[in-house]
Length: 248
Image (cartoon, rainbow, N blue to C red; front, top):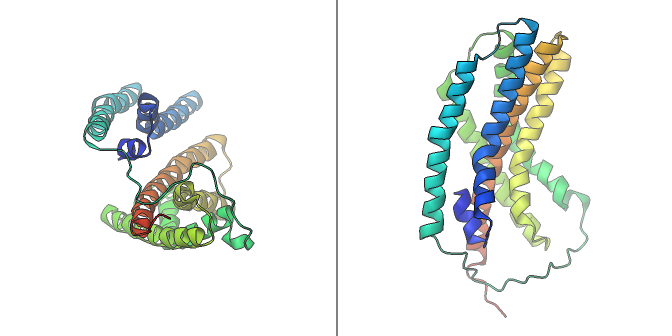
């Protein structure tokens, strides 16, 4: 999907794009896991992944993620054509008119992320309770349903916000749609920080690093998932919106 979008918009640095999109999140996860494991071993804790486990993760990345991503990239560049815009597109950025503060780019980004975050805040609370109680009390199919609901709400809120953005003559909907979804992960990270400060008595360096690093990875995943779906949906919405616009 990433490669097809990159080609539609005329991207030429295919190798760099492929390396970034295939390795960013796995490398972040591997880095966090390695840091926590090394710190745990240095302190004599049992909460660490062994070297064979880390090697298994690396092999999964090399033998599963990279080949599948490579096949998808090859298929995208071989069978898809470049983006065909149905209306005139100017290379010169237009002047964005002044508008009220809550209709500007960044305020609208974080306003768009409030609704989907509200849909998962209760589930985040129970996940954190389970984490500190060292037991899993949530059913994974239920979490999957919550994730789907979050994505649907995030996409719906972002499409409305993109329409408001375009209606105010702001053409920067591409990054806006992604950041609107990513703001859900930002809200989730802020909530995990407040939960640790207000609801727990943990103060040890290892416990805090373990909690914050893995919370960062989970919130990053939430932000990237919502951001990706938001962009894809907004891309379809904008294309359909301007399909019938006549060029002067």
